[in-house]
Length: 354
Ligand SMILES: Nc1ncnc2c1ncn2[C@@H]1O[C@H](COP(=O)(O)OS(=O)(=O)O)[C@@H](OP(=O)(O)O)[C@H]1O
Ligand SMILES: [Mg+2]
Image 1 (spheres, rainbow, N blue to C red):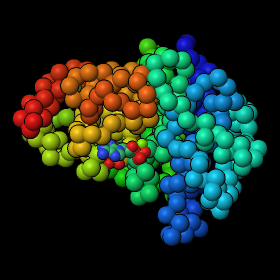
Image 2: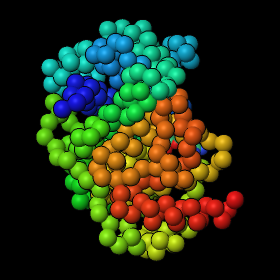
Image 3: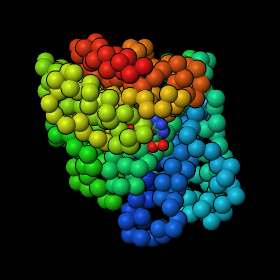
């Protein structure tokens, strides 16, 4: 097996960071984090980034990380920083060996800030670079809906390992897809999954637990024989993907069901396990460049599960040119057997608008 250690570190680091995000949400639900704070997402984002980067740096000191956050403002906000530190220092997997593999707990608040700042890679086509989104789907996280802790390893610009922690997706693959499944406030029975993929070795899912991660099974996209029955997933925010274009494309394909709206890369995970079939991300603003941390893990997981992922022009997502996907526009993720058909409909609808 290739990238065995990288996969294990990524899975455990994402699981540990997911635990932190759940504690933050629980504090918010209890009212311990006051409303004026507006900071649950900041706390979760910074805390999860610190934990994951510390784990990467412990195991692979030479690797670079493209992380969504940086700590310069946090260094000036002492109160916020110590709040985050209080959570970070106490977040553990229940399995001691696993924590040890991640380098154990962080030692000082300064270590935490330095770990956050180590996510400053410019990305690119050379070497080993991790792409990290500590909380993707921030709005979903705040609502107790879908969000994801996302980590991918790129080698020379090619995604080799992808892991998505989705604390609020159901463990049961066959549960029909609906928005806001689960509640992040608790370790609710039956919710929380970890998707992983290694290039060339398929995609897997396992329950996202506090203990050592084991078990699980391989997943694959659903082979859609009749596209009119396909389940489409789309962003919640109208500003992130055009709802109108999505509806027109659905109509062109004859899709009858309503699209399921969910935040974050949980959409990629859902397509990969066959709970959803088509994920379209249709540009709203011409100038917006998608960020690599919003797509790297999901792209690999869907492709390894038998799906195809391209932009709206049919080009593979290009993770090798920096922190953004500036060569691409939008995303079309589907089972391989319907990708050409969906892409054609996307092209027809979007070209009519230019
Ligand atoms: N204008 C525009 N167009 C496209 N995408 C944008 C745009 N603005 C932001 N973002 C990024 O969208 C990430 C969340 O994507 P989602 O698919 O989860 O969207 S949604 O929350 O369901 O609307 C979100 O990631 P998070 O910030 O981690 O939540 C952003 O990086
Ligand atoms: Mg994101």
